[in-house]
Image (cartoon, rainbow, N blue to C red; front, side):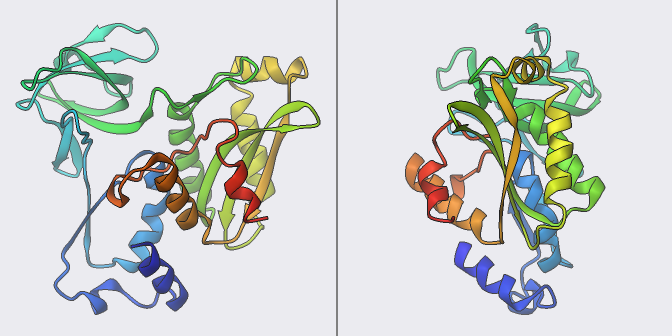
Length: 274
């Protein structure tokens, strides 16, 4: 898919996939969390073709499935509990509140008992005590170099809304901590057709990060330097996906690029692109 995407990109958005695949009526793919960033680009090529979210699936169990333009809880598959992100309280599905975020806990017929998946979902609706859930990230995706406690589950909704509201033509956006002059700072990787909006994006993201009191404290005490950006032309994300797949030893269909990388993970990869 990576090579085909690159080929299609060189032809421009005038070429529609319907011309190449006339019998294609549905595209099933990841559409949530970091994947939401690439849906607008997909739509450019897939006019007239329905794009359907996969829902939330894992080796351990299924959580949601597509239904009525949303992802509904598969309530007959397993027994589900939900730990609220803010309060850490446990709730059953009929108790979930729209707009709040929860970590999924599974008990399955295969023998898993109260298994914490690490998947964090937000409730988009709760109709007749059956919730619609949106995957927003992994609870384990946290960086904490100086006590700043940056979490991907807070970054995903903000960055996706930022791109959507501002109409920035960004094809990749990633954050990771780096060392500079014996100090830590965060670097925002921006993949776009031009550098036009890069500084504006940096300023908005830095303002958002400063709303985190722990990040702000680290900045005020000098433990963290200001956010910096590194700009790349289109093509970075495809190569990063291949690199991530190789490092994590996972299959093509299972690749879900994070938006927040741990310290040092991107060092070798990015050196090849400088």
